[in-house]
Length: 122
Image (cartoon, rainbow, N blue to C red; front, side):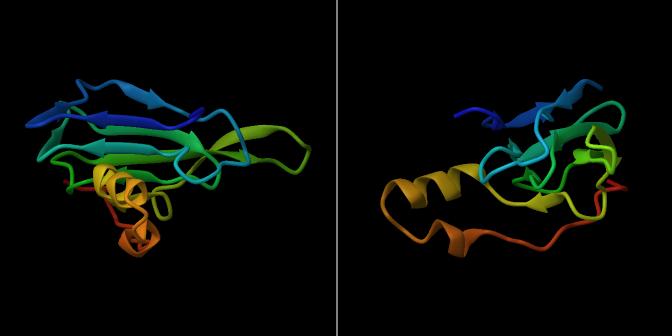
């Protein structure tokens, strides 16, 4: 599926200070966002994630590092530019729960936590 990124580990994810850039469209769709799934999510410096406009950056658990998020947003002149999305984009949602529910015909939308979370501090 074009556009979605899932970073999943059984024990821990260490982003190692890398920027995750998944932003390529200003018309994002469901599951084109970014998912980090592990019991422990960290990085030696703030985790920076760039995403599509209208998409979320999801974590299975609160990261042990500050998170900065940006979305590729449409501009008035028809161009696109990254805009800070710290107040709207970070969410706590577990990718495997959503996918497994959808695969068995369950109500995966019932599992979605639509409330953004402040991840500016670990």
